[in-house]
Length: 481
Figure 1: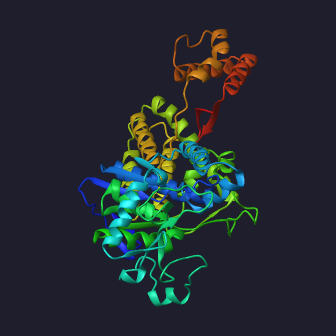
Figure 2 (figure 1 turned 135 degrees about the vertical axis):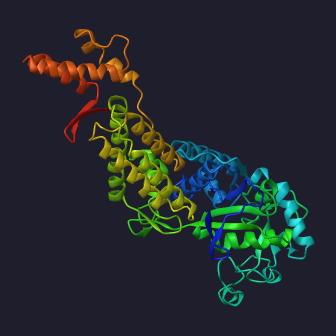
Figure 3 (figure 1 turned 120 degrees about the horizontal axis):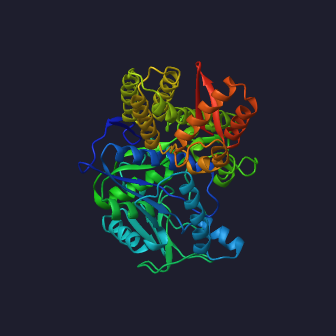
């Protein structure tokens, strides 16, 4: 299995620090507002990373932070006249409900900054003791020029960074590139006691402290959006390695930019789309399938026309599975050649995912299996057990992507057909398959006997119960609609 490491700038064979275990950290939300579709790309993708690693047998320990102590939080809370932690709790609770709806599994640990201040202070002390940070009138700054590897992750040189840097009014740092580890308290902020006075953590230090506490000094995978590479992740590397003297992350993974119809998402442009907005228009499987059709390192444009196209495609996959559920019971043939197609699909799928989580190629493999299933539905010589095996594998591969193709339950259909069953003495105590097969057989007999009224009544009853009957390659099959 190979992963592109942003730090080294190349594809590398994946070798975890501890055999059989993966420690993974992904930068979490700053919940000063509703979660938007830009966040989705990152969280859906790393959910797939976690699922695939677990599917391969790894034990994954996945940590995210919640930035509930931050300038944007304080500003929004002051505008709304509520406590900052009340604001972040409300928005984070809503974000978690939306992630649940999108089948994004919750991290092993979800750690709020406000609940991890002691470990943050401890890490800052360690950095100061190692000579990489200094106190300045209640603030603590990291001394960038002391850290020789600064700029490696973002592929920038110190001289170039210095040329565009300046000290902002009110800052107490010695060098324009230095960044705050601790900030003296201001009005309307959540503040904590520290050796340097009352204040609160800088933005960058929280991720280093939380990941080190729960995952160790060197972690396997650290993820986030490409916009976080500089300065956030660059600063994480510097402060973490200054504290421990060890490599901080073995595999840095970054998701590409997400635009809306070719433009950057912005409230001023009127194209700011919340997760709530998108969930109101599309089911979760459609949204996930859409986001995974582009490689995670490539940019993706959030386009409603393409989403509609994906919606139609997902419906076709559902329909294929439901037709196959009938065929696997009805077909008694000996042709099991679809099993070869299943094995080819699995090889293609796993090769794609092992190649830096190439989800577009993996979905192509899934689509090939759907195509093979549709072909077999046209041939009653196909072995029903082979179709069942293919469906089970299709559901498994979709599940690895977090695309849960839920099989429709029979209870509602059986209840909807109760009256017509009683009228024609069909299927007392039988399951849905037996009921529908009996009704279709009865309808065909009624047509041959020219009892068209009864035949039409059965047809209408099936239609009203959302049982869809279609001719597929000259074979009449039905599915749950």
